[in-house]
Length: 119
Image 1: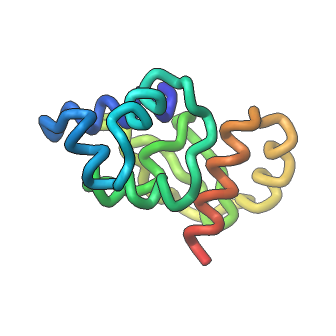
Image 2 (image 1 turned 90 degrees about the vertical axis):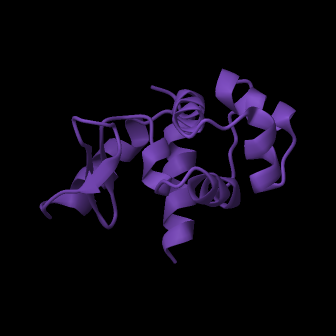
């Protein structure tokens, strides 16, 4: 599921329109629509943070894969709702370093945005 799909899913779960979400994050409904349709691929760390707050979810919710290694921990999708939770520590940093070059550009941008948010 893409970031846009997750934005749309969560927005609809909350019964929110694109216009309402746009107002909450200080963006136009067109920007929200472009994110949801995948037309805009570069979502900034600030935008992810605002989306998380507006949609009452964690920034990690928007990560497109079901199991992602981050510098601070392995994140895995819960089976019931797709939200991410922290798993037990293991060789996380090594795994991240090995996997990072094979990630698509969108995934790399998301990881970099999340790392910036954690500082």
